[in-house]
Image (cartoon, rainbow over the protein chains, first blue to last red):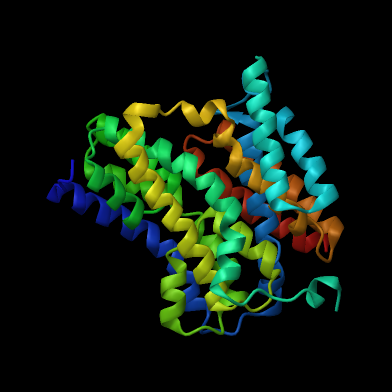
Length: 109
Length: 235
């Protein structure tokens, strides 16, 4: 139960390295440079783009295809959360409403 | 400037812990489910905790444990992990304007904690302004602590509860829910029209790329590159 096999440790170190490099390289390198205004402008659109892309995959995709059926109700269940997010701007409120909606849908279906 | 700038910037580790609350709410059930899966994939409790501590990347840990269970060799697991996590390159780059004033060693440590979720919280709170390293550290440490503790708990107690318990309570939906809540502040900065345009383009490209690309791991990266470029053109 508490054993750590050397081969597994080595695998985790390899996974950790290839995960850490993309996380650290831009901060380490680009922080030393003066970034041109056009790049800063471009970067200001990265958060909204990443979030929207991640969210679209979560809500619309099941495996590798689009699934909007009731057995994959993610998009429909997210609608109340969109309303709460737009009205209150409360992150915790949004999360709780969406979890509750999903629990309710799964209870009923 | 606008109202965003008059809002006080969080500066302490406690502020970071507070900001991490929704992340932790998502990480605890999903980390627990990962612990259950890791045990059934043949990992020990200690190995499960170590993986969450060292790798700390949700989807690639699930994929890694699955590949291990099916006997896939280590090099291909590592290559897959690299592809799954390459999107963090864009997130780290986007955090440069907020973190560049920090010492190099501080950023080397803070970079370890960049995930989809901590990135989303950071950008929503900071809006491109300089960040206190204490705030970011508080957010990152609390988030990762919840992930590690939950995966160990899942590895220890999973056989009692099962990995479906969280499913019934909708808790697996906490992370997409967070993206909904964090998209709003990111949509309503300056250049609102360009932001909406970028968001719609990103969603469309991500879905099309996932459905059509042979390797769907590229979908987030391609969608972000295209949508951020469109955003600049629309602004």
